[in-house]
Length: 144
Image (cartoon, rainbow, N blue to C red; front, top):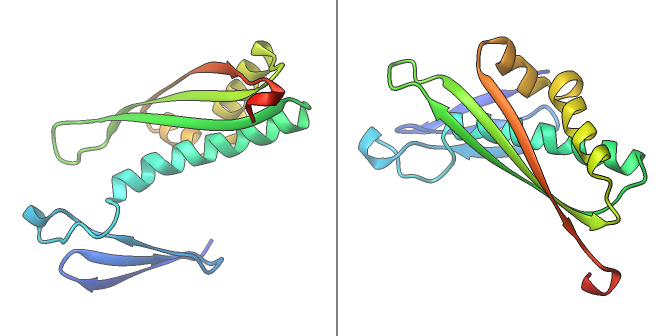
């Protein structure tokens, strides 16, 4: 993987991926920023949520589950000292669909947590307590 981070001004940066995508990172005004973009640790929490969501959706689709939405709410707690690393991350999945199997949803989340989600597993191996739970929302065909 080959990515770039370019300084713009003050504490604003543009991060560019090797696939040609870009995003802005910036700090709050009290740290010299203008609040024009995400903070690096927000991006890291989003990486865990999006990596795991990707796994859960693709596993459920392969399992022929009729999912209509997947939302992951990520709650991360950081240390009060510098460096303010993550101490814990909790992912709460809200999965909607028709005739969803609770067992298959639970298994998809377990597979992501234990085998597939590189971002989550990397942080867990570094000592971060990563936990998951979920809820299923049944959708009737007429509700779509």
